[in-house]
Length: 450
Image (cartoon, rainbow, N blue to C red; front, side):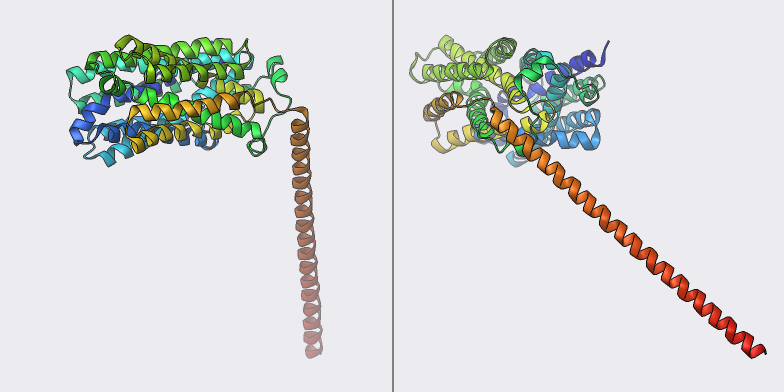
């Protein structure tokens, strides 16, 4: 089996394990009862986790350069397991924020971003499909672990359930890391890559383009909607729709399954249709879902439909964004360019939970998100691939930078040569002085002997 197919299998295993964080809402109620805290305070852990995940994703490329991809993914396994393990015995909510919010989130982020971007680079002709498979596995983890965690919570204590989850995540991620190879040694070029971009943008070049920030703003809004709704799915069902625990938990399965379907369907279409219009479609779908939650009949099945629409669109959105970033800014610096934009994942999550905390209700939060989704839809019609002028400007800046670096290197080399020459001249002068002194001393001794 070739390295890239081994990497695909290993990446799927890693992403299945790391995707389990999306079952966190199952633990909100038992944890709030344990700490005697408001459920929104416990649910904020997921927002903090998402922010830490985004930070981890943004620095994953740097860690890969220093440690190597296998070691970074093993580190992701260790941090994720440690975070869940500490959360099992957290004495108060602040320890929960530190363990599940920071450690688990950061570990999940570095593993997720490296497994995804590395795998996509192995298959440049099928970026949409491979993104769909990889991110679909990440979403599949929430469905798989929803069943596992639900079983654990019913049959074991809260602490035992978190510990078992920690062991499973660490073991599966570590096994997957043994199959993953670094794509930097097998970077292919293809007609597909050449059609979508004519220049490889460095990160500092990409952030000078308005397209980068339009895409970032859209990503923040899309993530705010998807992460907030998915993160409190069970709570919405119990509080807003008055569902029983089992019916509310079933909504998590609906969200997980819809999320996977969205990733696979939209990801496959991303190789055939304009990718930015797929983002527009997903945004409109989320807007319609929130309008159903706000103004539709408050019954179980309409709730499931609305949750499924949000999860489907969010799954499709996060699948398409990596390919859009590679289209706009190239594959060479993909991890850096996408990593910075991915901080919007955490920012969006915090914004959603922040709005909810400030206004203290689901309906007002849904209304604010609806307004922001309308703005995102408008932005999606404003963004365009970098034009020829932008590309020529980037090439010119890169050439000028390289010429400047070469000139500086030449000047440095010249200064070093002059320093060496001066040192040699001083050494030669010292040797001449020593010879003269020796001759003078010999002459003196000769005269004295006479």
